[in-house]
Image 1 (cartoon, rainbow, N blue to C red):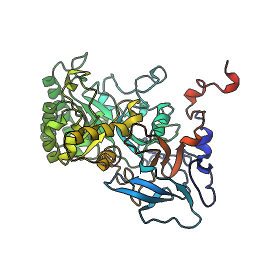
Image 2 (spheres, rainbow, N blue to C red):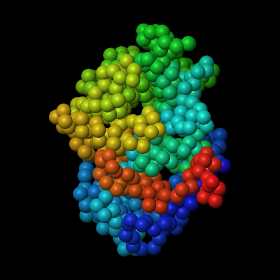
Image 3 (cartoon, helix red, strand yellow):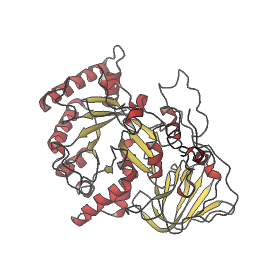
Image 4 (cartoon, one colour):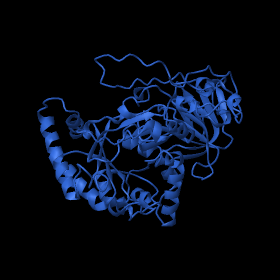
Length: 457
């Protein structure tokens, strides 16, 4: 069973050591929210059962606010009511009696959104979790990755401590068609559906290049891959026109053809991205984003023309395979300068804990190259831009009135290598406080690993 730590159960009622407060302390709130409602046959299969906990009203004042929407407020305040951002700006004054957190000049940003992760399915430790991301069965394109997600993966807690509040989990890239993605909120849960972001569109993960090519049961050439793409999309088009027997893979691709399911393509090289664009034109589907996309800088104007986003790294660890050889650190900055949509991603549970610094390195490289990119752009690469790519930007990704209060208060400029998250809120609920972090982990998996003091040798 999931054992919630004392922090998760009562953190909302704790006074903050580093913050000045006024007004009554808020009532305790369970981090996982209300008990999930029972689903009925009228609900979609595996529907989200996430319900946020009641969030007490709170104001954060005297903060440097980076809104994620291109604005920097040198000395601002933000008010949260009912788990939503009620007000934000330089002239916001908290009402009398409201609990106030004095940021003391620290930086406030939206929660980080990771648009490409394998946390919970191919994470760490692999001995406990295995690799749930790459299906090798007869119908890999029909899988839903959420059915492999392990909510007690200890890396979820570490990601939260690094300010990550929203995550898209994808299948791996071992096949041409790898199945559905899922968008989750980084909250304690017993099932993946209790983490599932309400209303977030599904995605389908497609892969090109080296990973799905050349092994047993795979095409031996890129030409063979293209033949298989065309054959599969033709079958999906026929299925969409006249559905037959239920086929999970065809149902997913038919949804992509209708525009209900976002198409995310693992693709490194510029020439392959251009060919996948031609494929999308042939069959009439929209590519939401190229992931990894290390050569996107070569075709940035075309990607802007096609309204295709780029989900990438800073790119300074190139050359780990041939299709990653022509990588440059300025990749994201070139796409931004061309007017495109770009986001940093992790693809790795260790890197997920440093996405703010990944954005900083890409920013520094772009500025050194003379590209017109700013600190506000870099913050957007890990907040509002990935939220837009995932189709959840109406709910999260920027600090604007009406949106969910997914917030991170940093001890320093978040683009500094030395910065750490002090406070992390999801839907207005304080889920992490660095000053009061307990030794007890929230995942049962680690409870037997970290022995209590009385059992230490």
